[in-house]
Image: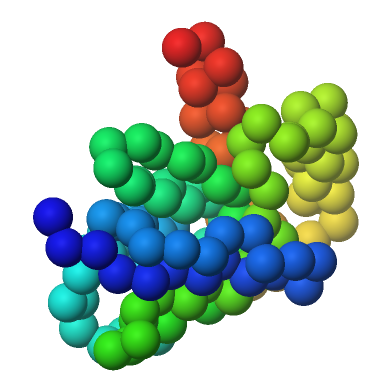
Length: 135
């Protein structure tokens, strides 16, 4: 399988840089997989699980928004936050979800819609993290 260069960058650090077989990205308009030779694209990332596949090994990273850019140089993901699942403070993440739920009553209209959508993404991440921990 052909490989391509991938960089995962967050404000804190360069989380990953290297040759990969595939990257699955949680896009705002739907999840998408990137392989070598993918068309040039810029996409907005939603909170979710980004999967890096190299030599049959899968590495999952939680991203909380950002941008993905595929060009002839490879794929670059500029994530607002990028945390390896193994490094996630599960108790703190659960607390964040509870706080988000409590604040829903303070919102209305499109702001409420956006808050519910973000909460759903966080709950989806929590579900996948818990399912991953069981395997």
